[in-house]
Image 1 (cartoon, rainbow, N blue to C red):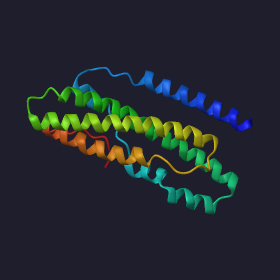
Image 2: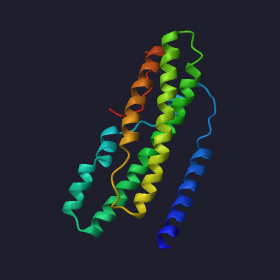
Image 3: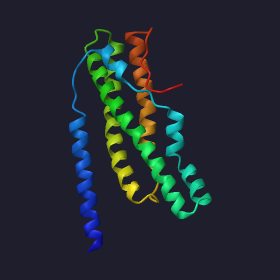
Image 4: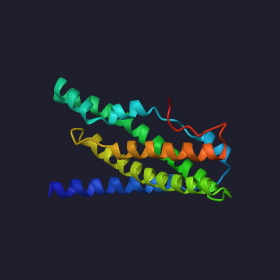
Length: 178
């Protein structure tokens, strides 16, 4: 009976998160320049460190169970911030890509299509990762996550750079800090 109650509560929380994400990620078409300026680059190495299961295992071995849970929750909150930023950036990149689909240059239009496809997958992965992070905040000893967001973000970075170089070589879009 207790398991059923926990599952119902978890499902309700997940539904609330999904609804919040759906409402906050409505697509609005606006100019390319203003969209590119709103992108917040992510420190990919710091994100990779937070998502690394080996780091979690190292902390698990070195810390007491209580200390590990506290540290894990802090790391999960930081990871959540990175995932949220990745999701917001994906929404902006979708809009940039949609504007690029109108290009008369076939290479730019194809690059825009790839950017939209990859950014849509990134946004979906970010939504799922946020749900998993919420679950892990309750049970911090659960398995690692966010590798899908991290890998997809790196792919989107390549697509965004390609499209921006085709459209405006002097000002490429940066979604990763150097």
